[in-house]
Length: 403
Image (cartoon, rainbow, N blue to C red):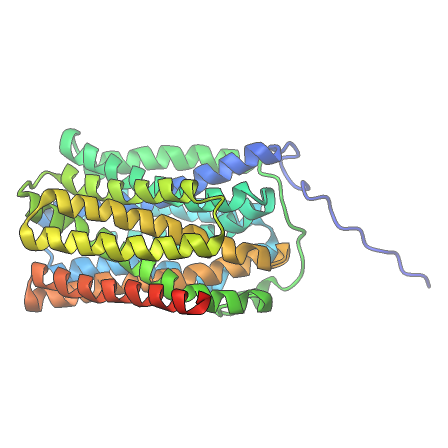
C-alpha cells in the first residue's frame, strides 16, 4: 500500500487566521522584549519602600534580588529550546500569561513571601520569553534582529528603573500604580501576540527538549569560548551596577531621592543601547575589544568617584561602563548568531543567556553577604576592583589572540 506523504501546516496555521506582516512582527517582538525587561527592573526602586514597610534585612533583599536571576536561569535551561520545537508564538504567549500572573502577585504583595513568589514567577516568565523572543527576532530579519536583540533589553531596563523611580518620587501608592500600568501593557500585548506569524515549523522532540542542559550548536562552540571572558566580565559589571549602584548613588551624592538611583541605571543602560547602535557595522572583534576597554575604564572611574565622593566621576564612570557593555554585547551576539540554523537559534540564545545571567547573578549575592561583614563602601570597592581586573584580563586575552 502506497504511503501518503505528510504535508507540514503553513506557518500561519492556527487561530486567529489573520497575521501581522514580518515588519510589524519585528516591532511587536521588540516591544515585548522591552516590556519584559522593564518589568524586571521595575521592582528595584520599590525595595526601599518594602523594607520600610516590612522591616526585612539586607540579606533578605539579596535573596529576593537573586531569586529572579536563578529562576530565569532555570527557565532558560528547561524551556530554552522549546520554541525550536513548538514554535515561537505559542511559547511567547505562555510567557506573557506567566508574566501577567507575576505582575498580579506584585500588585497584591503584602509580605516578603508574596514578593519572593512574584520575583520567582517573573524570572521564569522572562527566561521562557528571552529565548523565544531573541530567536524569533533573528528569524524575522538577519541584520535588524541582532540589533533589536541588543537595544530592546537596554531600553526596557532603563524604562522600568526610571519610570518606577519617577512614580515613587512623585505619584501616590507606587507599589500598586507601577503594576497597574504593567498589567495593562501586558494585557494589550497578549492580544497583539495572538496575531504573530510563526517563523519555524513545528517538529517533534518537545518533551525531550525540556531536559535541562546548555545546548550550544557545535559550530558556535569555539566562538562562544572566545567571547566568554568578555561576556562574563560585562554581565558581572552589569550585576554590580544594578545591585549596588542605586544605594551607592545615594551615598555619593548625599541625596536620598529615589530618582537618583533610577538616573544612574538609566544612564548606564541607555549608553549601552547607544553603543549597540553605534557599533552595529563594526567587525565583532573590534566591538569586543572596544567594549572591554570601556568596561575597565568606566568601572575604574566609578570606583574613584566612590573613594573621592565625586558625583561626576561616579556617574560618568557608569555611563562609560555602559558604553563598554553595549559594545561588547553587540560583538558577542553578532559573533554567534550566524553560526546557528533557524531550528537551533532558540537553543543558542538560551545557552548564551544562561552563561550571561550566571555572571550577572554573582555580584548581588557577594554584595549581600559581604555588606553585613565589611560595610557597603568596602564591599563596593573590593568587588569593583575584582571586576575591573576581570575586564582587564579579558582585554589582554583578546589582544593575545589577535597578536
